Length: 72
Image 1 (spheres, helix red, strand yellow):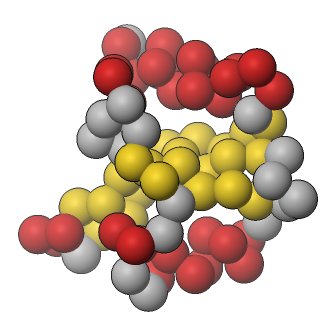
Image 2 (cartoon, rainbow, N blue to C red):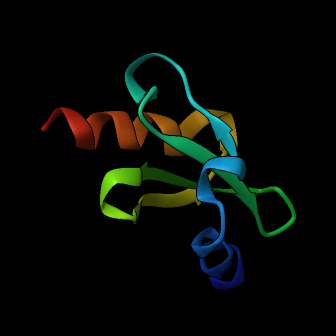
Image 3 (tube, one colour):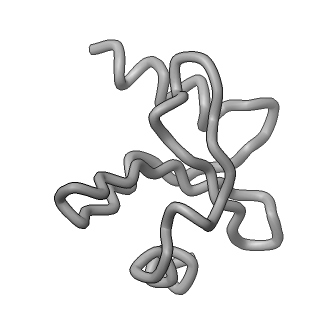
């Protein structure tokens, strides 16, 4: 999984897919046989890729967890 995160150093905006609704500022990248998702945000003006969560996609669990964490 760390290799997928390391690859975000090059063109992070072109990897993964943009998310919708409450997570529209974030992107999702598949990892480990597509079972896990890496949720990240690209801050282009600062040249920063912020990974905000990594977890199983099982019925959207990682997405719900990230939404909850961002509300707090």
